[in-house]
Every structure is written in structure tokens, then in C-alpha cells.
Length: 442
Image 1: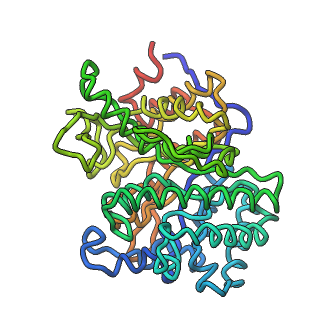
Image 2 (image 1 turned 90 degrees about the vertical axis):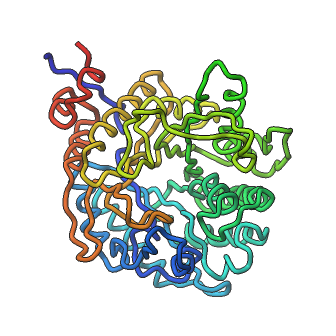
């Protein structure tokens, strides 16, 4: 077979993503450290514990691995509870530590993308009501100003809030995240306050750094009607997408929260994103179900025979990546894939998942869509929230007890992709020959 390749534009961003609570270890009092202490909240009652020991300094060796593998950027988050441990106190030593990490990234030629808030809130803030208390808008803006002033020498690319749609669903509708509520009204209140907090931070950042690029990372989940001929299934899929995928970014674009029965104006948030971050993992089939009003009258499932991850959490649906990017086009800003990956301890599925999804990204790039970069989730195995240590997303395996790292084959594959700035038929033949005919047909 003749050799062939798919190349990406010059200057394309290739990186991996992490988040503070999941990798730093010995996390200070925040809503998730408190949540972990409540029996039954985390699968098998796992604790984040030492995590990946980044706060103890092992960020150095992990970022060495990222740089040595040809990555040119890394997305990480800051732990608000370290930086502001009390309402009236800022921890300058914590800011110095983050400044050291950012400097270390520059020394490794890794462009930092920094997320201000990735699921966790300081415990004092959570006890005041968290996202349900409108005071958080001013608190978040003050936090943004403090951080940007401290890190502006190294960082110009900011994500304000990671996956606000997941927070609305998991913390306020399904009860899987703290505060564990199942209340649509609370979810909508939290969503409005997250929108206002994002907008306040956006303006605060640009006042300090006019050249900054500021966006939100949205979890895009595909929803396909189980029976395309069924108007009820089509309605259910559209409603799922409207409420989960569209609500937040459309509000940021238009200043309106669009609902199935109308819209609410929130004009101060309009036009407050310079790029949209897309976190894509999988796609659901959706069937209308009259007996599931709490889930918007929908039953969600994967197709029989789907290519599933270790625990069945993710189905490998590469076409969903293309659909996610096509969806993101409507917001008329540059697109960055801020997360994409799969749980796979044995690294059997990950090579084909990675190659198939990046092939879909290449397809989108060749429509001249403004896609600027890709961040794989994740650099190293980490604490996966309510699922604890049961899922392994890392290119590098972590032994939680010894902190030893072991390179998975996909780490070598991703290194070749980063260095090549593309995918070659030789890579596919070597790492995932089972998808060779679909990626490079004769």
C-alpha cells in the first residue's frame, strides 16, 4: 500500500489537558474534598489523596514527558481554594507556585492554557451557596483579576469555567456532584450565575490583558434520535441538545437563555467569548420516554454492539467529533478541542479512538473551519470525580500507591502525531491496523 498522510495547518496546537483537583494532590478544603468524605458519594469511596502529586513537584517530570513527545501546549487549571483559602485572604505562596509552573511550561516550550474554575469551589464559598448565590459573580471576578495580575507574564489563553453544562446537570439535576441536588430551579439559578460570572471574568481579564483570548470549555454530547422516522425521538434528541449543549454558549453569543418554551434575556453576557472550547467524548441514541420527565422524557443509550470503553462509559463514535465541530461553527469564533479521550487501562481502544477522532478533526479543518488546536484527555491517569480511580484516561499510566508512571503505547502514537503535525498511514498500520481500511482506503 502506498504511504499517505493527513496533515494539519502550521501552528496547530497539540497538547494534553489536566485539572488541579485531579492531579495536584493533598487538595485544600473545597467542595470536592468535603464531598469525598461523605460515604457513598465516590465510587468505592475512593479519595483523590495524593492524586498525581503535582503540588509536590511531579508536574516537572510529567510536563517533561509532554514536551519530549512533541506537544507544544498544555491545558491545566488553578485551584481557587489554594489561592483564596478564606474570603478575606489571598495565598501569595500558592500564586508563586503556579507562577513557577507557568515558567516551567515556558522553559519546556509549552504554551499554557489556564482554566480558572474546573468543577471545584473553595469550601467557604460552597457553604455560602456556591453557584446558587449571586454574590459568587463578584467573587469570581475578583479571583480572575488576582490570578491574571499574577500570571499575565506567562498566560494569555484563558478558560473561565470548565463544562458549566456538566455542573448544571451533575450538581443540580442528578445529584452526582456537590451539592448533590435534584432541582431544576437550582440548576437554572446556578446556570445564570455561571453565565454572569463568566462575563464578569471575561471583562476583568481583558481590562488587564487586552490581547488575551478568553473562552468557555463546553462538554458537547451528541444526541441522535434512536428512530430517525419518529417525531417523538427527534423531539427528545433536539430537547436534550438544546438544554445540555446549546443553553450556555448560545447565551454567551446572543445574551439570551433559550428554553423549549421561550427565552430569558441576560444581555450583559452577550459577545463574551474569543473562542469556544469543545470537550467531546461520545454520542447517545435518544428515545422518547413518557415515564422519564426528570430526564426531559428521554431514554439515552448506546447502539448495540458499540465499541465501548472499559466501564461502558464511552462509546467510540468518531463521527460525533465532526458533528461537534460543525455545531461549534454557529458561534462564529475560533474553535479549540479542549478535551477528547477515552478510559482504557489496557490501551486497546485508545489508539483507534485517537486516530479516528483526529481524522474527523482533519476533515473539519479541510472545510476551512477555524479549528486551532487539540488537547487530549489526559496526560496521566487521574482522579475522575465521582468515578474515583476506576477510569484510566492517561497516555501515561499511574500507580496510585507508588506514584510510578508507565508509558502506554498511545503515548508514543500521540508523540508521532504531534511531531508529524498529522496522521500517516504508517502510524495507523503500526498502532491500529484494524481501522486502516477506513482511514486510508485503497
